[in-house]
Image (cartoon, rainbow, N blue to C red):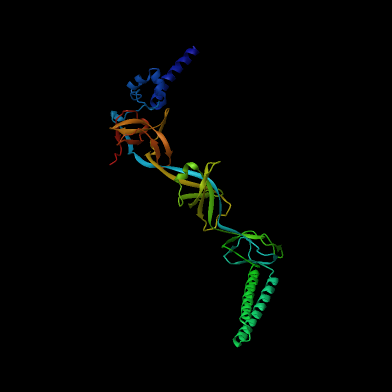
Length: 382
């Protein structure tokens, strides 16, 4: 008795669940069609008349509007947009100019005028070496020059009075010229004891201290002009022919990806690396607020504009068992169009599809469509 009661209750539940599933679960229509229940339920009004030769994915059986009217949809005309391609790379930055400041003569550091991290202008004194010996040499050369000039004056007087020869006058003039050159050399040697900034920029760490003995060529510090940064990076050889000097790009430091800076291609190498099949590129970006430092890593993004392709609203893209598709309005009826997605963004999706001139693409009302049904445009485009 209990078994028969369970069977009756199960059949009652199934008899109530099947019509509900047919009305509210379109995915159940293929199963109902296979067991022969879909057509009777369509005649009873639970679902619309089933269409079998629609070419659309399972579960897309459409329902008619009230009173059997055409389906109300929102559709938009096809557009054409360029296919945008982006090439990304990682590069390292350096200052637009950078020099090492070194002593040019041997000596002891007498004073260091600047501090690490300080900005200096070209020609500003950075450090001084002990220059007493060089000053003595200048004074000696000056005395010799004065003596040579006095000797030249006497030679001129003797030559004018006829007591001196032309040869003596010539030798006196040569002695003056030699003394002048010796003075110039001594003054130059004295200037080498004062170390100045060869460019404007920011001073790096000071490598030596006051009182240290340094040799010619010993690096004191490094000055880098980072008002602009040069970024070295590499791009694949497939885009080499599409790059030109002056092309725009965007750079973001890996330490702060939210910071996006505009830049320009500054230089292109003349040879593709045979091992990596990449080309070395240099780009320049501004650093006016001095937020960035040389040596930082940057993500470089270069955009290319490609050929135009069909573009549809992202809402128009549907998915089925065979892939992506859209509903087109053609001659007042819905047309199922398989598509291949080329590029997707927030505003549009670029596709490849077998469209015709005048096709409209449905963006709203796609849930109730099937191939060949009549449609009415809610806002027909002018």
